[in-house]
Image (cartoon, helix red, strand yellow):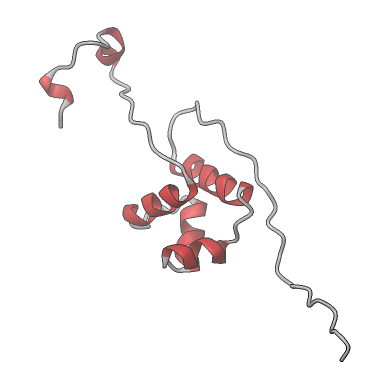
Length: 108
């Protein structure tokens, strides 16, 4: 019995995208670019991630385009899966001057 040649997959190769400068102020587009960069750096397709997280491919595409109408829960789910996290900082001038002192006004 002769062996058949290995079947080649016709899937698309994931092209890595550049990570945006994360030291700049937050924007939905910058977050979207970071998510895309992380996914492509891990060589994951849109289908890989959407199937793993049980979200639709169109939803993931919206997340990667920075669509602000996507449910925040889905954005967080994708970020967690890819190993990304948020860091909250204050733009409040007084926060920078009194780093050790936290007022009640900052808790809301």
